[in-house]
Length: 267
Image (tube, rainbow, N blue to C red; front, side):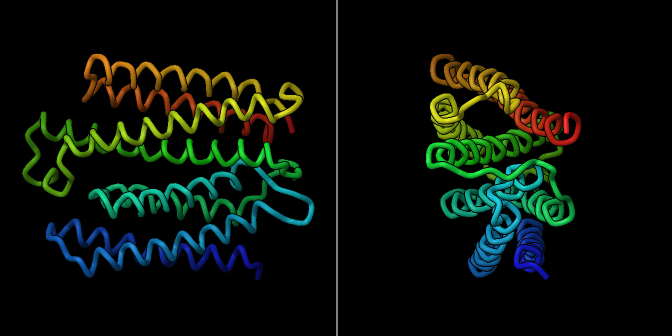
């Protein structure tokens, strides 16, 4: 059995254990330092195994595979690590309930599905572009999850169902503040990633990258308007949620849409 497969199975076991423990913590609605530490430790072990599995499916002797399933499992490993580290500073355990199942699915897909995307060498400039893009997509994914939970929280408050559900969520103001912290950092990384792409990626038309670039620029514009509106006009609530999800949708459409066309239609 390959190392990537073994590491992937181990990661799934650790993710599942951490997920169950986190669900019990939220259900109990009490702070348990020992259980919280165990959630973090199990999560970190899962991320380490996940990263090892992702490295195995992405890199081989012929080069680096950046197909849909390969890059997705790497992105979710980065997302999981970022959320776990952020959870040390802010109560974000609720995000783990939505994230860890997606990370498990990403691992399973990377182990069961083989992409036809051809391997390629990774020059330093291109590596920087890939790294910046992965970090930006990871933070925007976390922001989208945060916006989804904010939307659910707003819905519960408007329909006065808060007594049974909202007590398990962090305060609305804290969740919203963290959302914009994520968006500022993610937007900076996306800006650098786009610039690095124009500088270091050659022959973009031949690689089918213009579609991805156009949607990335559209998403950049949406997030720029949102951050400007937050700074100048104090936008929040439903407006912030809609802009965040719209910008994230453009990123997903550009990234996964272009890769799906290249790998499964044009191929």
